Amino acid sequence: MKEFKLDSKQKQQFEKYYEFLVQENQKFNLTSITEKNEVYIKHFYDSLKLTEALDFSKIEKLLDIGSGAGFPGVPVKIMYPNLQLYIIETTMKKTRFLAELIELLELENVEIINGRAEEVIVNYREFFPVVTARAVANLPMLLELCLPYAEAGGFFLAMKGSAYLEELERAENALKLLDSEVIGEIKYQLPDNYGDRVILKIRKNKPTKEMYPRKFAVIKKRHL
Image 1 (cartoon, rainbow, N blue to C red):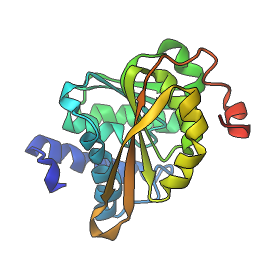
Image 2 (cartoon, helix red, strand yellow):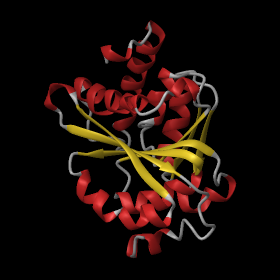
Image 3 (tube, one colour):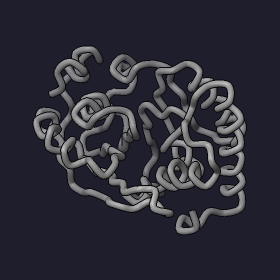
Image 4 (cartoon, one colour):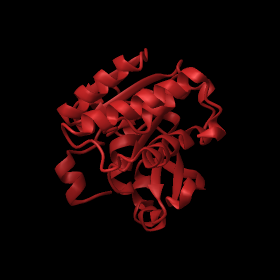
């Protein structure tokens, strides 16, 4: 975490985050990773690498879809307190956890939306300069769920593991239909040999057609 130059308040917030995550994880399953060093690397460090894809000091709003226990949105918000963070999470227990976490960390300008991405889109279409998702679904599905939220000229930052190339190949048609393109691949290795990761920097070039996203069952059955 040293490379991110966190101040003492931010370090305390991450410490509180870790303690609360482990505490609440005993009640319901938020993460299979609970050992402190592993949480810091696989969740916190990994989330903060998102800030290397764009200059977040110049970004007003970030949408995190399928955030789960808050990754990557909440760590990015800790690092950039002025950022307006929106989180879409389908699971009610995780939504409650996130609400309590935001209060505990005293973070302002965070909106937590309980619902499915393909349903709550009505209020947020073309609304965000940056949208992200981590460990939610395969890339062709993600593109259809996430890109409608991004404004034309905005970005979708897809956080993926080392086997991303196969997903990228399968996503070629979706990228084309959704008027978007991969303009960068930020590859990095997690400390302590915890694996390789990549952030796909995808730019949306035109507004998304109203027909997208389709219903989730349809997307799952036949991706673009």
